[in-house]
Amino acid sequence: QVQLVESGGGLVQAGGSLRLSCAASGVIFSINPMGWYRQAPGKQRELVAAITSGGSRNYVDSVKGRFTISRDNAKNTVYLQMNSLKPEDTAVYYCNTVPPFRAGSENYWGQGTQVTVSS
Image 1 (cartoon, one colour):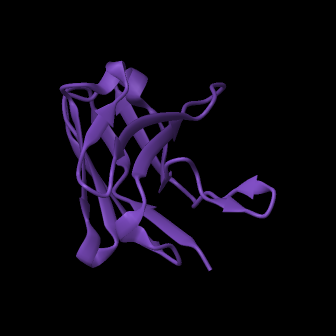
Image 2: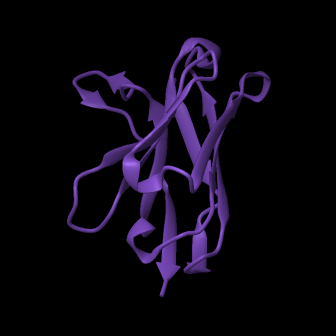
């Protein structure tokens, strides 16, 4: 059974930093590309950072130079270091495989972690 547990979100002022963590189980973590997605109110969920099993990284333009994704295959954990946060980064952040893990006919998602950036 797949389980993705995100943590580390919170309320931070603009310019601040947060580090998100995601513990994964039930998937063969080490061979899967992993990503961090976010969904802001009224917007579609988007992939903001991804890392392959070999450590290659990609970022959406809006977070390049500010966010860093990393993974620890021994701990089945993926991280997102977020620096220089902006109010527009406010969203619920989710981790998942890339593409998202399918559970039957739907994508599986964990509970996410809320990030709120005040101006």
